[in-house]
Length: 450
Image (cartoon, rainbow, N blue to C red):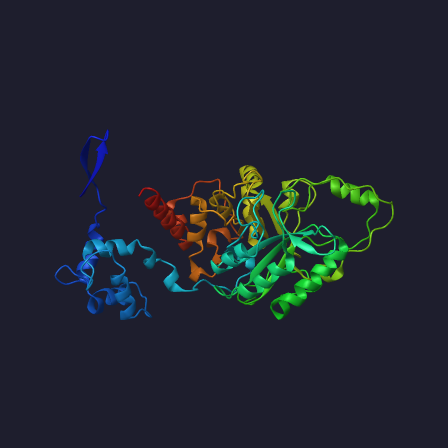
């Protein structure tokens, strides 16, 4: 027990005892196995523990010494039991990072949770912060694998800019964002980066953007051509490749009536994130065709089918696609279509994004989305809220490569998992990912309570 004091009414000080977490018996017994005279030294103690007990075969005595040197407790020639106990719960003893990439990376992309950003170009809030490539660079350095870009015509209508439409955010050029993505895409992880485009361009600018994407990204751009996947490729086969995901442009001519009907629906901004504006009056004549170059760059086709949830969650055995839902849409859908969502995400991609009123760039609880198999749980990376801590902790798993294999019960096609049914703890804990989530949650509670 340590003693603390505080001043009362600016007159006198009152002392109280503060409880300090004590090492449990199993930790003490483990400490005794690798210590002598109450001290765990480098060679026969900590290094031996890391190699023999934790199976960190590549750990050296220098690594063990760094852990001891980093301890806040004396002496520096070893660890006593309290310091050893604190090390077990420190960032230097992550349960996943030391293992490197150890999940099977040969399954389809839909079998993985993917580290995903929302409005990746914003430096702050969603209303009037600057747009920049700096947040994109920072996200890629942290291992984020899905970058979102909202692309709009510039004021002269002759180039593509990235900005949050309908707000006061200052734009950044698409070219600058693409160049930074190419430079930093694989500094942390070799596994594929997905660029989700929220496209508001004219056909001419789509063609220009297609040329810009092709020329800037070069050989690392994965282009499926006219092929539509029956099953997504694996992260292993797409190593060091960049993938484009967006809604395919319509490849037929549009009349004024077609255009008006389209504009009466919700806009392309992440499937309902921003309200649409009515089409301006124009002549009733055919519009030019959408750029075929742009269409052929799209590897992961996005879109929301007409109709209700049943149509949105329909599984097509001949092709796979990506669906986007807001956090509120997912919560509502989960109440009545939980098993259908899980079935959909076994083959297809589900992206979940923050509700529109989160103008402060806050985030939501990702657990509902993960429990329903959503691969792309899009988060604002600008802040430091507790849900973002959970997201960062989740993707420390699997060598921080940005891809975490979904647990088997979410992939079982013979018995579709029902998130609404209470399952035994034994069943849930069979999967390492759930153990990791529980571990992260405990860590968060420990940090917020200190």
